[in-house]
Image 1 (tube, one colour):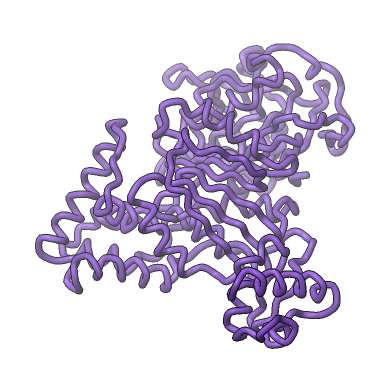
Image 2: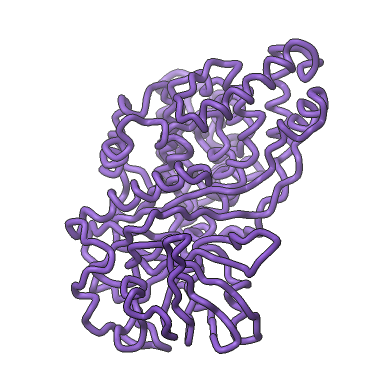
Length: 501
């Protein structure tokens, strides 16, 4: 269609969207020279984001609903077959149907080995096309799953709109993008922008051909440091990219200026010690500018009484300032004017996904030892907001609850305290279950160790990562070997899971 016909299609769509579903067959009747319905449909798709329209399965276009998304999410069991086929299609196009075997299989396996070695050595990876394919084989599935677990609490709290503007910085081969597309319901309208300068963008482009009709992608083939985020976005994604930047804090600060007032910045990284600690350090640097970097454990307005509802007060909207940065999840800042200064190693672990066929084939051709299978879903993350929203919005009463910042004064004593569960069990299959916990005031690590399970303390085991817990009559001990505090949960201790409010 010519520009005048396109303008007529858009003008008619603007009018009809207020009246009834928009049918391309009907629209063509109002356009000069009556263009083919397929051409009308293409124009409507290209204009859908600007017009606020979603395309239904019956081919009609309707306004995107105003309410937030409320997807039914029950975890990720497998990497979808359509994405697996798309990736194998790229591998067949480059190497032929026998891509896992012979020289091509050897090269891909060597690339994966090199990726692992370079990552753990802290070296920057150059993503030419073959390396991007190897990375996709090994990492597409786990990042596809991980991002959905991170988004689920935001959606549950009504903080993801159905009309979303997304900027994926360092989008790579597309694991988070595909996970986001499948997490959202079909009636969500997504303007997705990816920033990716490397050959990984070629893989990303092919994978995005498989997403739903209301997910509208644009790829910007430029570096994160060079891209100008001139528009405003509801969701900023940084997945496994911040550790590869020379100045991650400066880059994140610049992109935060493009975050909508009620938007979220999601940062995702592997769970290994150094990367996870660096991510937590960046989280603190971005948020703690609000209070001049008050150290964990320092006294401030946290020494004034908060409300007391079942032992914990709920922060009020009036207490929040517009533009107040806050950690929405998973770490908590329960005590006002206190910030954590412990080492910050905290990561989530979710059930393994099924082995994707492309990983199974590459691994089998290389001896079948599992070296090239990656089905673990383990990740570190933070979600940052600029409107003061927190998933756990409790302000403890200092007369009722002890701060972790004051643990040195309680060694050998039993106390009551509030803290979030910040790990799965760290003791493995032997020993007492051990969990990292935090309340946002801690200067050193705190671990809750379950020495005797009862019906009254079982919530320590049952709580999910990030859940707030109330500990009553927990014994505080200093662990000299680990340089940390142990909170001993025994048959005299009560542990209750609190609602995230």
